[in-house]
Figure 1 (spheres, rainbow, N blue to C red):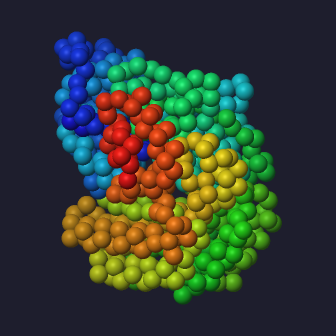
Figure 2 (tube, helix red, strand yellow):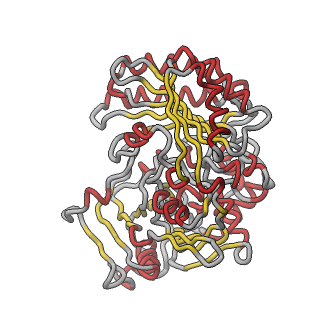
Figure 3 (cartoon, helix red, strand yellow):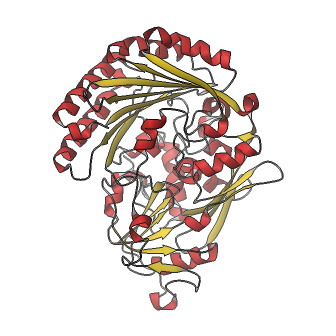
Length: 497
């Protein structure tokens, strides 16, 4: 029996491994309280509540449970874990791992009532698991504070955090998960626990990089940082014809040696023109500092650019300053998004040229897939690498320089494209994963961007001590394997791949 939990945009899956609670279902109410709500497909909001960002390898839902409180959620988990029901909890709904397709005829746990952001007297911030980055940064920015946040405004804060939490400010402040100070969580049987440096320290270590394996996170607390440069940042979007690819990536590779400026973040998007289907290249520079400093970086690329715009913008616009038209289109719910990714040390120009040429050929053969994109995030790493490798379950502190994503997008009715798109993206991931291309001797995958077919060690680290520590945590907090569906930590050391 399978169940799953998807918090704040990223999935946490649960597998029932033939085990059931000694309690019977009859001992629990459904809904679990008078305030709790359960709706079937006839509910007018059913389609809206169950539509996900991606329909690729998607789960199916036959009822929606909306817990009204922590107690309601706890009681609901006791009921679900003692029954034959399959469940999936949702806030942002942006998770796209192919493991989600194992969730069929499920109860959706809608976490909409756990969306809140509370600034504390010590300038820490407490965030409910239903909160998106958009609401989060608006509260922080209004308080003159900042923290590393993800690229897209509608993605959930907590879900992104527990896989690590990359973002443009990681050169200054490290990962989003590095700022965690406290986690409140519901376990499989409804028990509520907290984890921090003061209590359940090992669980706290594991949550920061592998959090979907242990329970449903209810809320978290982050430390925050005073806004840099008065909360303002420089942003510039540049466009290039595809023949300038080598020149553009030569500049980026130079900036990466020996390390990227910690205030600098570069996002690169390569996608076919919707009319000509010829690939085009767009680059966004964000510099967390004065205008003139940011312009110096922009000028390195300007000789090759066919056009650019630039602005000084507030930190609260951080999730929307790059490629606003592309981002707006990419965040529309209800289309297939099949993605593969890999981490690389530098940007392999010859391989990128081959990939871009191949993408253009693919788009011409399958025009309905013209929104497919090669997306590259190149962010400063000083804040990430300032912490020791053993600081948390996040394993990539020395291999997080570039995240390359091959994102295949096409209409739901373009069934003839699906297999070809999957084959193309998988082939590119495997090509860029080769040591002579990636620059790393082993496959490195950022968990939040994982497709779901990779060796677990590529997501969680290859060190035996990591395997031992994570497996011990798994057996302590999820002894019956309820949370085994999304990049599951093995309960036996011999099962690590």
